[in-house]
Image 1 (cartoon, rainbow, N blue to C red):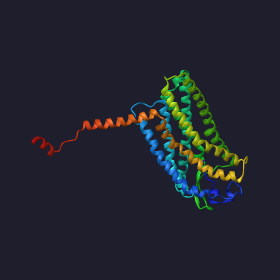
Image 2 (image 1 turned 90 degrees about the horizontal axis):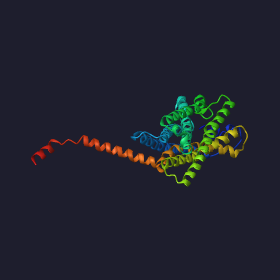
Image 3 (image 1 turned 180 degrees about the vertical axis):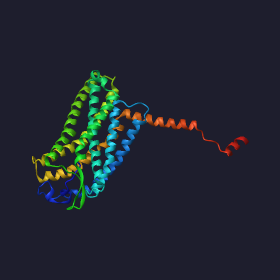
Image 4 (image 1 turned 120 degrees about the vertical axis):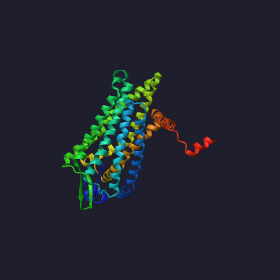
Length: 348
């Protein structure tokens, strides 16, 4: 979970999972390029997700159920990218954590909690689309804003619950061999470590991806049937569903490689698989695919604008509201004429 084997980074072969694999030069590339990449996605993520949240907040109409989920997803993405600069400094500093143990815990919990919350908010999105299209008559009454808000609250709580191991076991420790203070997961024993890793795979990948896959298959089947029957009455729902499917696809592209690496790393540590090539792949892959997954927080708001016709309409309406308010305020408070201009008008 966003950690690095110190021996792998500093070239100590005795600490590379107990193998005698030769060291790799790839860490120098990670050390130099990854902080720049993290800062870029941080800036883009903050700008784009703030924009999405402002559109939803400033629009005069109340958010629909789908928009409640999207706004919570944007909030989770925003909080996640706000935590990343600390980790960029950590990497550029040779994994020497300069912010103290409190921020070591809080920043890691922020990243973990918001990543898991994003995943489970997408689960809610999938279920909402499934109910809206597949069981419109049976469970349509359940698609109410108050239930959507309650569901989002539960998902935030679940995200925090899944981040408890990070809160409990993250700490800063001085490593004299490397002369650094590292922020790392210090599990009490190997059994607890394996249990937490298995829970990560099951709760953050297998369960949500199973629900999302089931809902997506049913949604696609229903859309095909409705396309054949040429039902035009539910075009709004179908447009919303198209947006959700694109967002889900982006999530899969960004997050599946990270979870595959996590599963391989777990199998490697229980010695079901092995080898120097796999060891080097896991060391670098853990870093690369973790931060590739975080790119999803930048991609989501872009997709809202490109694919979401209703969102673009909301943006136009918000700008129209803002322009009308400015025009109304200028009419209410006309500029006062100076004494000279008044005198000129009187003389003329």
